[in-house]
Image 1 (cartoon, helix red, strand yellow):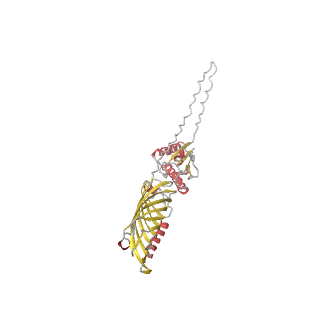
Image 2: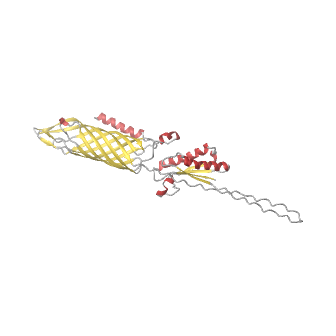
Image 3: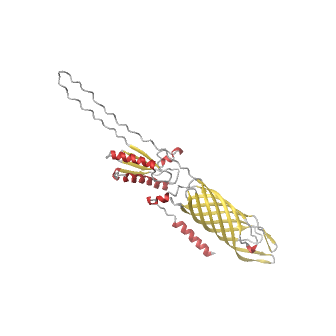
Length: 374
């Protein structure tokens, strides 16, 4: 048993260190990003689990003819079904409750050792990896199980099915099947404090394995309303009045035509992005093309591009990186269309600035890159 617990401890340590690294998203990961649809913070979640438990029990037997008790060791097996719900406070932290049933498979002496109904509190921490289908997690769980059936008689004494305090620690992996559905696999350690037995007091240490599913509500996809591009009307050309030559005086020199100075207005474009994305959609690429046309028309003009992110989704670190990626996407599009990089200035604000305000009607507008050419 000590060897099993030692191997489990090594497995937990490997999970919590090897997979807690931070990876920057590069353009080479675009295919992976298409299969991942956003974060899970601030969402309710339903969970279902099927599992099995193998326990090593220290069994203390009561003997009416001998006041000295005898100690025995016994393997114990049971299957479990559990379901529950909880809340994702962040992309990493989840808390909830679970209830279910346990069925003993191989009890002591071949006599039914009891089924039980269980209720538990669950705390779950994910090692969240942005733009990945899978996430490692570690889960702590504790609760109570009420024995419901399987009373037994030993040495003429009827023993009711004991109630149980249970504690569990389990590492494992979540695999993202869809935006709102995860497949879960975990293996961990469980300790049972069995209480209420007339014949025996059994504390069990064991290994528990579970497979299950997490289901969340989908995030609505909000398409931002494009900002209309102002049309610059050219100034009309004023024709000079015809000159009437008096007689008999010589005709005067004609007055020169007035010089018309064109008023050059800046080109301002708001390029909007979907939640947690930085690829430029076709309808937004048209705005980038407007900036390219303006810069080609005015060779001395320069352009400033600044990236932003929605403060109400993700967190500070994710939003800083996301706003930088959005700026780089627009920058790359301008350079690929022949604009000299020396004419482009870029900056990113993350979620520290909300250019359209932080009211709910403008959440989606703040996922943007603003381009100003003049």
